[in-house]
Amino acid sequence: MPARTPPPPHASAPASPPDRSESTRKARAPAKAEPKPAKATKKAAAKSAPGSAAKPAPKRAVSTGPGRFITFEGGEGAGKSTQVRRLLERLQGLGIDAVVTREPGGSTGAEIMRHLILSGAAKPLGPLAEAALFAAARADHLDATIRPALARGAWVVCDRFADSTRVYQGALGDVDPGLIAALEAVTVGDTRPDLTLILDLPAEVGLSRAAARSGSKADRFESEGLNFHRRLREAFRALAVREPERCVLIDAGAGVDTVAEAIWEAVSSRLKPPAPRRRKRR
Image 1 (cartoon, rainbow, N blue to C red):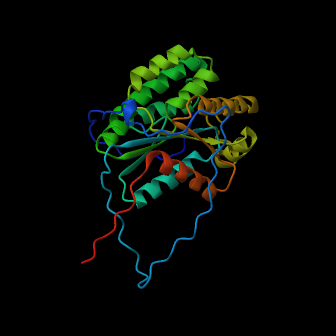
Image 2 (cartoon, rainbow, N blue to C red):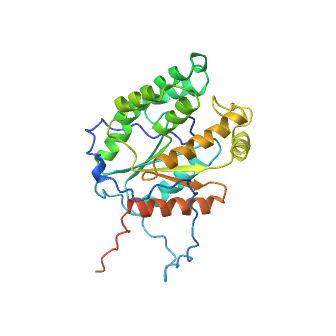
Image 3 (cartoon, one colour):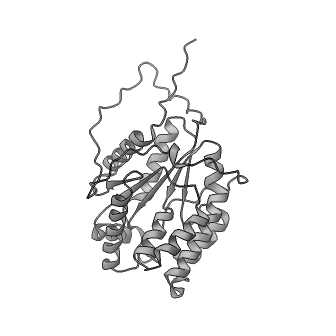
């Protein structure tokens, strides 16, 4: 389950995890027989500020109440890393304290595990061993980065999370679903995503994009064959069907701006980010 988001700075000491009970979730979408990728609507052009052309001072990041946890999932070359950055910029533009991170990785210990996994060194050990390595990396990532950020009220945007283990090692690697669930219960606990955005793209297109990006340096999962990636796409689409209250399928075949707008519509409708604060006139 590779990712391209740059690693975050070293996190502060872990804090106690916030209350993430199901009653606080904001999901609204009803279950559907077959998911349809979300599409963006056209927006009116933003009005330019009158008067001086001087740039406004950047908004100060503030706590907006309970933290929010957003994850991105999908096949190779779907554009997750790009859209993670776009969403981070939009949240920060509203003055929201937002943190970007990735899996595998996102903390000092987990970044070490990332190299081991994506280099292919663990592949001969099989999917079960890889699932255990991902779980170990995830435990450190949660304790060092994600939970402290959520505890202070930040919004965490993560490039891949536990769903990738369910799909790559579970659905495609044939690791027993009960074992995957047990590993997830121990490592993740109640720290579940509030919203998961699944970027959906035909496998052929995604692999072409990944090859253009990585060249001859394809990682452990990018180097798998076309049939693997077709099954990967179907497994993520099935996840969107099973958990529509948490997951939104996004059509990743459109332009970058269109995809970003579809993502923002999903975030806005599900999680209700606060409107930017207006400065008081003196």
